[in-house]
Length: 250
Image (cartoon, rainbow, N blue to C red; front, side, top):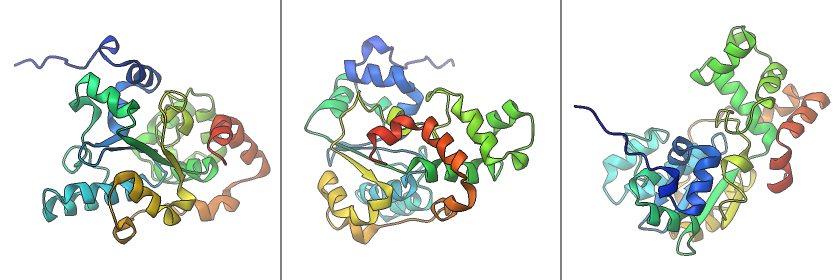
């Protein structure tokens, strides 16, 4: 049995959804958008910006509507979008409702962002340093093993890529989020997340979020910034992520 390709064409999407999909691609929009129809919010994740914590915390609370078994699975594997996510994903919605999700004041849209310097270093330490699949295009470009790729070489490669070409773990955040296309009710700095749970509670309509704070994994990149960065590398990152620094308040 052949399975038909039922992905919507851009012409079937609402104008804002269409522009966002054109910018970042249907796959990225589906992967990184987490919708609660019950609580009327949309969390758009930025990889390497507290997304594991956010998906485990919010996802655990969404999953609680089904029972403790799903909560456990979500919190054990918050990045598992197939077997554990309790969120509604864009592909599951008709185009008119998806457009409402991205535009209507009935939904609160928010995200968590991170200082570009510590975020890109975290991506390098995890994905390149551990030789994970995200390192493969960098390895192919440089023609050397992942274990030999320096942070400077890594920055040279990704700095020559468009945002859509970049892996989401170090993609330019402003473009990844569709800033200028989507309007967000809140853009929270990861560095201030611990003090922002009351605001997240307001956005999600879920009380006592501070009590459910959940985080398992960290590369410790923020503590290693001074170890890895020279003035030249800081300037290189500032050039690559110029728009992030301009619009995200870093």
